[in-house]
Length: 400
View (cartoon, rainbow, N blue to C red):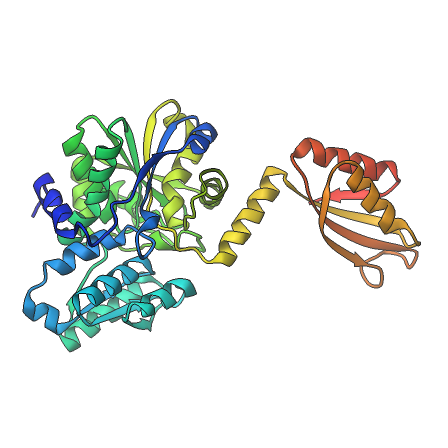
């Protein structure tokens, strides 16, 4: 079976009114940071916070009356789960969702909030899939695969349809890859509408399964990743065949680039993205020479990130950029020292946001103390000015 532009347009008509036709906006801040002209497709604005609604809405609308009565089951790390749960609820279909145990709590709660029954089974998507298939066989459920299904792929492809319609100047489209359904669908749509367009996929460094498959290499994946939504070991055979036939390249990006992309979207574009949703921008940051001066379309395909994780990412980015300064000082244990240090930091315009003062156990002498400061600064120049003023007071200062 193949996927055509007519199939994708039929899917777009089928799901119209059931999903949001999200905006495609040109981002000046992201463009200036990357050296490319960047358009962002904001599918994080879908009701469930991710593009997965497109495929779920289309696939469920294709079910027969008997299949609807039987109920559906899906396995997912979160976004497909919410999408299936929501659209099953809208259609009055019973839904069971199997999720890996590591799935962020926000995704579990939201999936249950749409009325689905959730089972947390397995450490990986592959283990969750095995359990889901077993339940489907035992109970007669219809298995709704997150990416290895042409009905789902056709729905996901409507994203590219909208992007090209709204931003026809796009020369390069960069799409995150988990199982490969979104990239396969978007590549089919984009190349049919604009044959000269460059299509690129993106995977994280710990889960480059599609890149390995396309290169004819054995699949070796695993490791902690902030992009858990695309942490897939077993890519879809249908998407794999489609991408192979189209000659699509998949880039592999480091975790740090994904974190930087999340921070840039939040601070620069005022857009909240999860790791998988920011992966396309991470590729532009990691390989700037491939995108400089070109018009790039980037789907922000998910925004379901835990507040704690987002906070940590933003703080880590501030440290990397030199806008948070961590100082370790060995100081004499006498009255007035803390006041003097605070005054010197203030003279340089720094803002002390955290202090740890240890005199009993960490200091090498009873006549000294160890002090740790976290200081908010504008840039590295201001950080150096603070360090210079402290050293001028004969304080021993270490950064880091």
